[in-house]
Each structure stands twice: as structure tokens, then as C-alpha cells.
Amino acid sequence: MEEIENHIQQSMQVARLWSQAQPVVAAMVSGAVVDFHDTEELVARVAEIVVRNFGEYDPSRPFVPWTLGIARYQILKHYERRTGERHIYFDEQTLQAIEAAHVETAPELPNRLAALHECMERVKGKSRQVLEMRYMHDIKPDVLAEAMGLSRNAVWLLLSRSRAALKSCIEKKLARECES
Image (tube, rainbow, N blue to C red; front, top):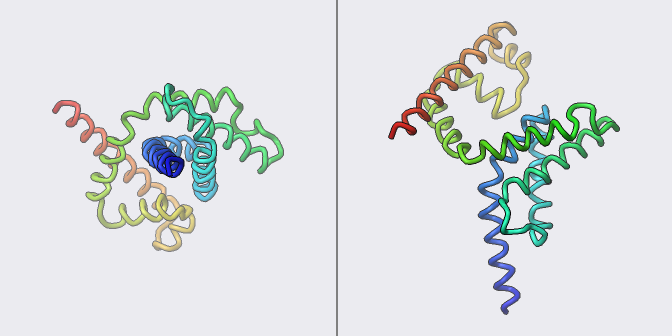
């Protein structure tokens, strides 16, 4: 009975820690891997490895860097499988620098995500449609242009302006939170 209780406690702990690390891992992976579906697959693989190897995690050390180390290794393996060459896109030093940047910015990610969601709620019309189709459904700009009856350049301009407006909104919201 005690073994079952320990297993439940460990499962709850890994779930809690992973829920904090997952957005940071996803951000790092999506910054290093272009294809949306490959990104999802890699994040899921990292989660599986984290659960499988949780017994090796040293709780006296921060969890997010441990998961980012696993993610770094999985990104390298991804490119090796895809191209046969591990260092074609990112060498290990570059991925370590990316990893360090994500560790440094991890604490502010939840606030940024909350601001993004609030700002996205304010986006209406074609701007919202193009952002959702591009980033939530991974539809390429050329396909968007055809589907929306716009020129390729018009879609690129709409995406650029929409991203700039979102960025401005997020920065304003975060600045107001810092003032509070």
C-alpha cells in the first residue's frame, strides 16, 4: 500500500513540475524546430522521457533546466534523424545558449502567455483570422492567401501588422503589471 501511495505522490509531483516546465520547453523546441507537427512530437517525447526518468531528477536542483537539457538532446537527435547530420542547423553550443536564455526568461513566461491570450481576445476580423490560421492551424502564408482571396504580399503585411499590434499590446499589459 505504501508503494502505491509513493507512486501516486511521485506522479502528482512530476505532473505539477511538468505543467510549469512545459511552456518553456515548448518555446525552446518551437524556436529550434520549424515544423509545427515536429515541435508537438518533440515536446511530447520530452514529456515521456521526463516521466520515465523522473527518478534520476535531483530535487535539490531546478526542474526547468533539467527538462531543457532533455529537450536540447532531443532536438539534436531530431536533426540527426532528419538529415543524418547532427549539427546541420544548430550545434550543441548554440542549443546550450538557447537553453540558457529560456531558463533565464522562464519565470516571466506565464505572465507573457496570459497577456498574449488577453490581447488575442481583442484582435478581430481578418487580423484574427489570419493569426489563428497561421499559428494555431499551421497554415502556410501561400495557402492563406488563396483561402482568403488575398495576394501573398497582403497576407505577409497583415501578419506583420497583426504581430506588431500583439507585441505592443503584450508589452503595455506587462508594463502596467510591473507598475502595480
